[in-house]
Length: 393
Image (cartoon, rainbow, N blue to C red; front, top):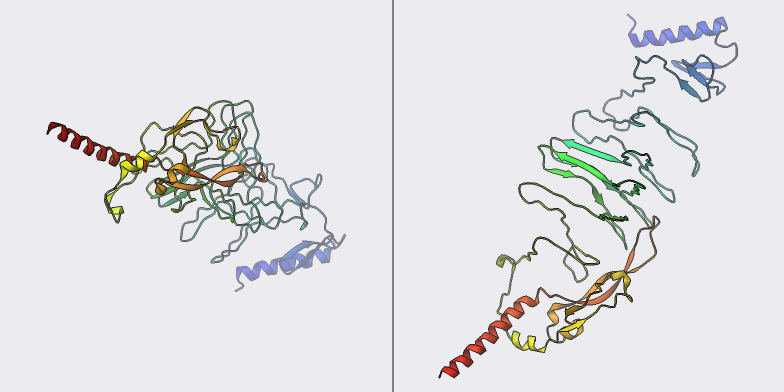
């Protein structure tokens, strides 16, 4: 008995022999075959459902039947193989020319889905760009009068991890962007550089945006630049939950020039500041001595900042009351620190982003002065009590 596979091959061979013998196949030398493969000999265009006219591409398929959802289907049914490709687009291997694939649709230009169950990682889309002066893994251009999204991510999973946007980019030269967005609402109300909705229904982790960034000089996990007339927010963070809820959580290794948060301008809060002071976190605890003597050496001043000379610092223009860091350093050097401040505008990035070179200035830790002042008051009170006792005697 002949197997179905051998029968199909035999049928193709018989068909080919018949086409050649009848002259239908060789009458203009357009077609040839090798085994089960049929190919075009003269690089002509091929049309399916085109009626023989309007074939302007190498292969054109037209499906006038509206009841048929799929015009062309490509399947690779190989199992247990990671690098199998259903369809591959390739165009002109020359710098700055050629498009691998162009897709147009009334609803979706490209719709991709990876939902096969089982072990491993699924990618709805995987894009690679390399070796150019500028490389984009994904680049979108969106315009219209209605709400428009360069990339809109809505992620909903029932287990552990949900990523609205996950970017890991490595370059060997100047600039690497996990996500670069330029959103403008010319006459409208709302413009979002990135808007992500990520939900882990029964799981532990959901990331609206996750970025892993490394650079030798300037590394921005997230760079936001917002311009407008009113209600302009560089970053808006909202969080809700039952416990351990953080609108923004920022960390930086403890160092003289490291800051978990740096604000170039005024800072306003409607809540309260809390400084960690748990006894379990402290060593070598001792009482402060000689606080009153130190406080008496301090010289409080009133002054104005030279905001015109240092515009990049956004210094306040109102009258200030405080201390001079260099003077405090001679009395209580522990609360004075030389700080690396990003103040001097450097060369802008390729997208016009503001990049600041750092300069060093002296700063005073006013919060650290609170226990010194408390101790000074206590020492002063003891002196007052001693004087009262003498007067009573």
